[in-house]
Length: 219
Image (cartoon, rainbow, N blue to C red; front, side, top):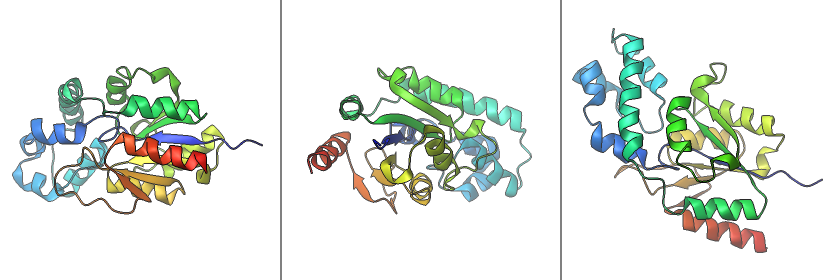
Protein backbone atom coordinates (compact mmCIF):
# COMPACT_ATOMS: atom_id res chain seq x y z
CA UNK A 1 0.00 0.00 0.00
CA UNK A 2 1.31 3.46 -0.95
CA UNK A 3 1.94 5.69 2.05
CA UNK A 4 -0.05 8.90 2.19
CA UNK A 5 2.38 11.75 2.71
CA UNK A 6 0.92 14.98 4.08
CA UNK A 7 2.66 18.35 4.24
CA UNK A 8 0.99 20.64 6.78
CA UNK A 9 1.44 24.42 6.64
CA UNK A 10 0.92 26.76 9.56
CA UNK A 11 -0.55 30.15 8.62
CA UNK A 12 0.98 33.09 10.49
CA UNK A 13 4.71 33.44 10.04
CA UNK A 14 4.81 30.55 7.56
CA UNK A 15 2.49 31.15 4.61
CA UNK A 16 2.48 34.88 5.29
CA UNK A 17 4.82 37.33 6.99
CA UNK A 18 2.16 38.29 9.50
CA UNK A 19 4.05 37.93 12.79
CA UNK A 20 6.33 40.87 11.97
CA UNK A 21 3.42 42.81 10.51
CA UNK A 22 1.46 42.45 13.75
CA UNK A 23 4.46 43.82 15.65
CA UNK A 24 5.06 46.64 13.19
CA UNK A 25 1.49 47.83 12.69
CA UNK A 26 -0.32 46.72 15.83
CA UNK A 27 2.33 47.36 18.51
CA UNK A 28 -0.13 49.06 20.86
CA UNK A 29 -3.11 46.81 20.06
CA UNK A 30 -3.25 44.77 23.29
CA UNK A 31 -2.14 47.74 25.37
CA UNK A 32 -5.03 49.84 24.04
CA UNK A 33 -7.53 47.08 24.80
CA UNK A 34 -6.32 45.70 28.12
CA UNK A 35 -4.06 48.45 29.44
CA UNK A 36 -0.28 48.42 29.84
CA UNK A 37 -0.24 46.32 33.01
CA UNK A 38 -2.15 43.35 31.62
CA UNK A 39 -0.59 43.60 28.15
CA UNK A 40 2.88 43.47 29.69
CA UNK A 41 1.92 40.42 31.76
CA UNK A 42 0.62 38.63 28.66
CA UNK A 43 4.07 39.09 27.11
CA UNK A 44 5.15 37.15 24.02
CA UNK A 45 2.17 36.27 21.81
CA UNK A 46 4.00 34.59 18.89
CA UNK A 47 2.08 31.41 18.11
CA UNK A 48 -0.79 32.23 20.47
CA UNK A 49 -4.38 32.30 19.23
CA UNK A 50 -6.58 35.31 19.92
CA UNK A 51 -8.69 33.14 22.18
CA UNK A 52 -5.69 32.10 24.26
CA UNK A 53 -4.59 35.73 24.52
CA UNK A 54 -8.01 36.70 25.85
CA UNK A 55 -7.97 33.82 28.36
CA UNK A 56 -4.63 35.09 29.65
CA UNK A 57 -5.96 38.61 29.94
CA UNK A 58 -8.91 37.33 31.99
CA UNK A 59 -6.52 35.52 34.32
CA UNK A 60 -4.70 38.80 34.81
CA UNK A 61 -7.92 40.61 35.66
CA UNK A 62 -9.39 42.15 32.51
CA UNK A 63 -13.13 42.78 32.34
CA UNK A 64 -13.03 43.84 28.69
CA UNK A 65 -16.02 42.50 26.75
CA UNK A 66 -15.19 39.35 24.74
CA UNK A 67 -17.47 40.27 21.85
CA UNK A 68 -15.88 43.68 21.47
CA UNK A 69 -12.43 42.10 21.74
CA UNK A 70 -13.27 39.70 18.89
CA UNK A 71 -14.57 42.58 16.76
CA UNK A 72 -11.41 44.63 17.27
CA UNK A 73 -9.23 41.60 16.54
CA UNK A 74 -11.04 41.01 13.24
CA UNK A 75 -10.56 44.65 12.24
CA UNK A 76 -6.86 44.42 13.08
CA UNK A 77 -6.54 41.15 11.18
CA UNK A 78 -8.02 42.76 8.06
CA UNK A 79 -5.41 45.51 8.28
CA UNK A 80 -2.57 43.04 8.77
CA UNK A 81 -3.55 40.46 6.15
CA UNK A 82 -4.21 43.13 3.53
CA UNK A 83 -0.56 44.19 3.80
CA UNK A 84 1.52 41.14 4.71
CA UNK A 85 3.11 39.35 1.75
CA UNK A 86 2.82 35.68 0.92
CA UNK A 87 6.12 33.99 1.78
CA UNK A 88 8.63 34.08 -1.04
CA UNK A 89 9.16 30.68 -2.64
CA UNK A 90 6.03 29.01 -1.27
CA UNK A 91 4.55 28.57 -4.76
CA UNK A 92 7.68 26.71 -5.86
CA UNK A 93 7.57 24.53 -2.74
CA UNK A 94 3.93 23.64 -3.37
CA UNK A 95 4.62 22.88 -7.02
CA UNK A 96 7.34 20.43 -6.01
CA UNK A 97 5.19 18.81 -3.32
CA UNK A 98 2.39 18.25 -5.81
CA UNK A 99 4.86 16.89 -8.35
CA UNK A 100 5.99 14.20 -5.91
CA UNK A 101 2.38 13.44 -4.91
CA UNK A 102 2.15 14.93 -1.41
CA UNK A 103 -1.19 15.90 0.10
CA UNK A 104 -1.38 19.53 1.25
CA UNK A 105 -3.10 20.75 4.42
CA UNK A 106 -3.27 23.87 6.55
CA UNK A 107 -3.60 23.92 10.33
CA UNK A 108 -3.91 27.17 12.28
CA UNK A 109 -5.21 28.48 15.56
CA UNK A 110 -6.58 31.55 13.75
CA UNK A 111 -10.30 32.00 13.09
CA UNK A 112 -11.45 30.74 9.70
CA UNK A 113 -12.30 34.30 8.61
CA UNK A 114 -8.61 35.16 9.06
CA UNK A 115 -7.45 32.04 7.22
CA UNK A 116 -9.80 32.85 4.34
CA UNK A 117 -8.16 36.27 3.90
CA UNK A 118 -4.87 34.51 3.16
CA UNK A 119 -6.18 31.40 1.40
CA UNK A 120 -7.97 33.47 -1.25
CA UNK A 121 -4.57 34.91 -2.23
CA UNK A 122 -2.96 31.51 -2.76
CA UNK A 123 -2.75 30.40 -6.40
CA UNK A 124 -3.03 26.81 -5.21
CA UNK A 125 -5.86 27.18 -2.70
CA UNK A 126 -7.84 24.44 -4.44
CA UNK A 127 -4.93 22.05 -3.91
CA UNK A 128 -5.35 22.21 -0.13
CA UNK A 129 -7.05 18.94 0.76
CA UNK A 130 -7.85 20.06 4.31
CA UNK A 131 -7.96 23.37 6.19
CA UNK A 132 -8.39 23.20 9.95
CA UNK A 133 -9.02 26.22 12.16
CA UNK A 134 -8.56 25.22 15.77
CA UNK A 135 -10.58 28.29 16.67
CA UNK A 136 -13.62 26.63 15.07
CA UNK A 137 -13.01 23.26 16.77
CA UNK A 138 -13.72 23.91 20.44
CA UNK A 139 -13.28 20.21 21.18
CA UNK A 140 -9.60 20.48 20.24
CA UNK A 141 -7.00 22.12 22.44
CA UNK A 142 -4.83 24.84 20.96
CA UNK A 143 -1.14 24.47 20.17
CA UNK A 144 1.19 23.42 21.89
CA UNK A 145 -1.18 20.47 22.45
CA UNK A 146 -1.12 17.84 19.67
CA UNK A 147 -4.91 17.70 19.23
CA UNK A 148 -5.09 19.59 15.95
CA UNK A 149 -2.41 17.55 14.24
CA UNK A 150 -3.84 14.29 15.53
CA UNK A 151 -7.30 15.25 14.25
CA UNK A 152 -5.93 16.32 10.87
CA UNK A 153 -3.80 13.24 10.26
CA UNK A 154 -6.60 10.88 11.31
CA UNK A 155 -9.11 12.72 9.13
CA UNK A 156 -6.82 12.37 6.11
CA UNK A 157 -6.17 8.70 6.76
CA UNK A 158 -2.42 9.14 7.12
CA UNK A 159 0.24 8.12 9.62
CA UNK A 160 2.10 10.80 11.57
CA UNK A 161 5.52 9.37 10.66
CA UNK A 162 4.73 9.95 6.97
CA UNK A 163 3.84 13.60 7.48
CA UNK A 164 5.74 16.89 7.74
CA UNK A 165 4.74 20.08 9.57
CA UNK A 166 6.05 23.55 8.75
CA UNK A 167 5.84 25.76 11.85
CA UNK A 168 7.54 28.94 13.04
CA UNK A 169 6.51 29.37 16.69
CA UNK A 170 7.52 27.18 19.59
CA UNK A 171 3.90 26.29 20.48
CA UNK A 172 3.37 25.15 16.89
CA UNK A 173 6.59 23.16 16.83
CA UNK A 174 5.73 21.50 20.15
CA UNK A 175 2.25 20.62 18.86
CA UNK A 176 3.52 18.93 15.70
CA UNK A 177 6.31 17.09 17.51
CA UNK A 178 3.93 15.83 20.19
CA UNK A 179 1.72 14.42 17.44
CA UNK A 180 4.69 12.59 15.93
CA UNK A 181 5.27 14.62 12.76
CA UNK A 182 8.67 15.50 11.33
CA UNK A 183 8.76 19.22 12.06
CA UNK A 184 10.54 21.98 10.14
CA UNK A 185 11.13 25.23 11.99
CA UNK A 186 10.67 28.17 9.62
CA UNK A 187 12.65 31.24 10.66
CA UNK A 188 12.26 33.82 7.89
CA UNK A 189 9.50 35.91 9.48
CA UNK A 190 10.26 35.49 13.18
CA UNK A 191 10.70 38.63 15.27
CA UNK A 192 14.30 39.55 16.03
CA UNK A 193 15.55 37.71 19.10
CA UNK A 194 12.94 34.94 19.04
CA UNK A 195 14.57 31.65 20.03
CA UNK A 196 13.03 28.80 18.10
CA UNK A 197 13.23 25.45 19.88
CA UNK A 198 12.41 21.79 19.33
CA UNK A 199 12.21 21.44 15.54
CA UNK A 200 13.84 18.51 13.73
CA UNK A 201 15.47 20.96 11.36
CA UNK A 202 15.38 24.74 10.94
CA UNK A 203 15.35 26.68 7.67
CA UNK A 204 15.34 30.32 6.68
CA UNK A 205 13.73 30.05 3.24
CA UNK A 206 11.23 27.94 1.33
CA UNK A 207 13.96 27.13 -1.18
CA UNK A 208 15.87 25.28 1.54
CA UNK A 209 12.86 23.02 2.07
CA UNK A 210 12.66 22.20 -1.64
CA UNK A 211 16.37 21.32 -1.67
CA UNK A 212 15.95 19.11 1.40
CA UNK A 213 12.97 17.28 -0.08
CA UNK A 214 14.73 16.79 -3.42
CA UNK A 215 17.72 15.28 -1.64
CA UNK A 216 15.52 12.92 0.38
CA UNK A 217 13.48 11.95 -2.68
CA UNK A 218 16.63 10.95 -4.55
CA UNK A 219 17.85 8.62 -1.80
